[in-house]
Length: 634
Image (spheres, rainbow, N blue to C red):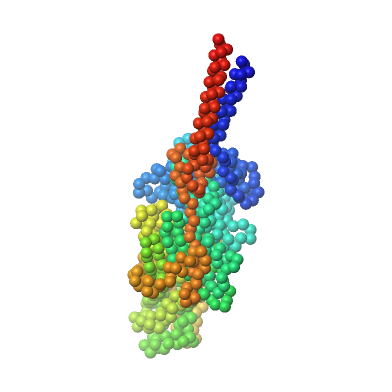
């Protein structure tokens, strides 16, 4: 009877173990990470792949990333109404980081237009700012007094950037203590376009791996392992692959692409780009141009419109560009275009050119020999077709404005008094029309035209998100350009100094006098649009909808073969909200269908059935044990 009792106990134990296994379900396949594996950091579940040698780890697979998930949720759930605190405001989108200090405390860092998340961790480590602490026992985040303590280990959602945070972490001696989940930098040999593709995959506002993980985290309402969704793909990435891949069509200047169509769908956005054809010539690569147009769209939505200006003015060396815009390639394009405008104006008023000869002839006839003016670029009225969730950008011209100006050359006694109305009128009638033509047609302004058309699309998105009440969720006007920074840093002051050098070297043999120019690009005003009616659109552009629709799957020429369209649609896996109490392990992946537990993905009905059977087995084993014991007592 002792042997039978022991057998029964083992049977009960086996039943319990089988029941637990059935509730956990199968472990998901581990994602593939490039690079050799190293010893895994503390894992949430045994199915988590180890961190790579570079430090990449699945989001939710080590203790710090799981703590950061809890902190993000708490910040979103406890955001004070109307708060301006970016710790709370950015919790749904920006990059966050966490560190465990030598004194055992956990601190949080967040990114905005001022600092990256890792920089804020370093400030707290050195006692230079208030601590933003996370309490694992309660899940709460709070501000605490500054206190220096070294970082024992850290985690950042995006790989620390090579041009800023990586060097700072290395200088502090803690870079090798950090892990991260999504790639941000390129590898040796990667081109600028390769890096843009990596960032699009990681941080695309609709289909980026980080974006989808945050959506899944919010839907789960609890932390958990979140793999990179394998079926997420952006329309931008599709367009790039189509024009650059094997068998790409010939005779298209993809480097001159402009964003001409967007749609706002529930499962993601759709984009189509227009490019001029070049019959008889090989196609040019437009990978960088497509990503530039897309990045510009996000910059225009993220940065407040009041910051959309640049200014090259001899007596304003400290007012060249807004600091937020200066971190982006959009700011670089605007400032370079302003410098190009100065160069174009200088060439046009050269008395040896046709336009210059006409200009100075009228100036002499009016008794004028000196001209001080300011030129700048502004948008003209755009022509669009809006239909529900679709936008066609039909025309988006720019124009040059000019006026007389007073200023003094820095470091010089030379001053330029304001000009007479007569001189200004002559310049506007002779030179400005040609400048406007150059801005809208010349290859030197291709980048400016591209980023401006993205501004038209951004204004449309702004209005739609504002009406839907989701503008804040998408970071509209947040000025958080952390993930929109230029891949290659640039210096606005260098462009300003180049302008001064050119300005001082302008010498004409005739007529006598010195010409000084100053100006800028001003996109601060709301985009003015002329909406085409249904009848006009069908009459003027009857084939355009079909061309755009076809361009989502293949490069498509217009009926007159003068242009080609190339686009793509975002593919975003559905986010399935799981039951209120998710399992602590598993993926939390939003891909795939419903009917399973939220984390493990094990079939629900199978688990219930297996559980019932195993419980009956356990009860039978228990009954048998008690029966044996009853017999023994008798």
